[in-house]
Image 1 (cartoon, one colour):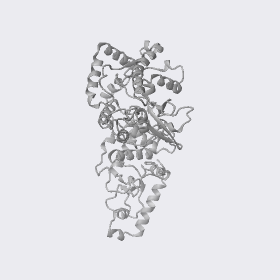
Image 2: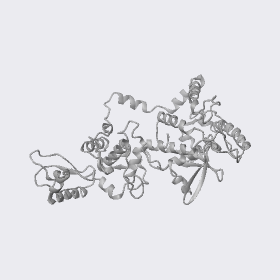
Image 3: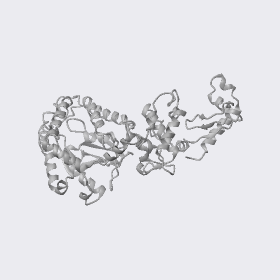
Image 4: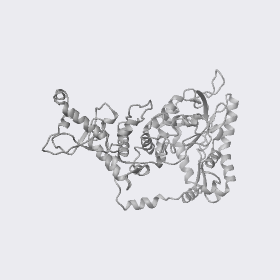
Length: 485
C-alpha cells in the first residue's frame, strides 16, 4: 500500500482495518483436514483476492494493474514470497532487476504479488501465477523471511551498489509484535515445529543484523521498533484489534522507547517543515482540479462515449491547471503536474497511471517526462472523468483503458481552437476534443449556421442543409490538422 499504491500511513491503516473483517471469516474451523491430515486454509481465499482488487480500484487503477506499472514516486518496493516447488525465497518488485530471467515477476499484477506474500499456510491457499504457458505456486514469504531485513540489504546493494552503508541515512525496521504464527508443512508435527522456529526467528534476525551493522547503529541510522505483549491476539482475530492499539500505545509511552523515537526523529530530519512554514505566510497556489465535480456544468451526462463528457467549463479549468504547472518553454514536467493535487483523490498512483497511458513509449520513466498543453489537458480530462464517474475508455487493442495511436494524436490538439468556417462572420472558435464539437466566443449580431447544424435534433436535423454539414466537417478537419500544442 505504501510503496506501490503510494497511500499515506493513515489511509493504509484505514484500508487495512476495513478489509480485516471480511477477510478473516472462517471457512474451515480446523487448520488440519480430518480427512487427509494435511493443512487446509481456514479462510476464503477468494474473499482476500476480491478485497485486494477492490482496494486497487479504489485508488483509481484497473484491478489488473502490473506490479511494475508506472507510479509517481521513485521509491523502490518489493515483497517476499516463497516458491512452493523449490522453497526458494523470491521478490516481487515494482522495478526491473538486472539478470532476471523469469517473466513471472515482470508481468505479475499488484494483486498477485499481494496474494503471494499473504498466502500464510493454514490461513489462505497458495497462489498459482501463470506465465509463458507454465504455472508457478507461491506461499507467504514469512515462512522463509519473517524479518526480511537481510533480503532488503542484498536487494539495496544490487540496486544502489556497494558500499551501501555510506549511502544510508535511515534504515527503519518495523515488527508486528509477537502473535502466534501458524502453519508450515502438511502434518500437525511439521506445523508445530515451524511455528516454534518462525516465532524465534524474527527477533533473532533483528539482533543479528544489529550486531553485524554496528556502524549504522552507532550513528543512529538503524532503528527497530517491535511492540511486544500481543501474543494472545491471533493473526486472524480482527475483532481484537483494539488490544493491538492499546498495547502499541503503551509501548510507545515507555520512556526508553520515547527516547528511541526522539533519536529517530532527529536522524530522519524534517526538511519539509521550513517549506510548510513559508507556505503558511505566503499565498497558496489554487488547486483548480478541485473546482471540478460531476455537475452537468463540468461533465456532460447521457453521452455514448467516454470522450464526450467534455464541457466548455471543464475545458477552461483544465487550461488553468496547464497554465499553473507549465515551464517557460510551454511544457509541463510530470512532477510539476503532480503539485496541482493536494488531496487524497485522485491518489498519486492514479495520476501516474493516467499520465503513463498517454505516453507513446510505455517503458519511459514518467518522472523524466514533460509534455505540451494538449497532452496535459487530456490527462486532466481523464483524471476528472475517472475520479468522478469511475469510467474508463473502451478497450483499444484489447487492453482495458489503453489509448490508441490515432486517439493520442487527436488528444495532442486538446487545447487547440480553430476559426469557424461559416459565412456569417460569427467569429466563433471550434474545438473537437469531445469528438462532436464545441464552440466559444461569438458576435451577438450574427447567428452561426454551424451551431445550428450541430445542435439540431429530430425534424430540425432534416432542415439543415448539406452545405452547413460540409462546413462543420471542414472545421473539424481544420482542427485535426492544426499544429499540435
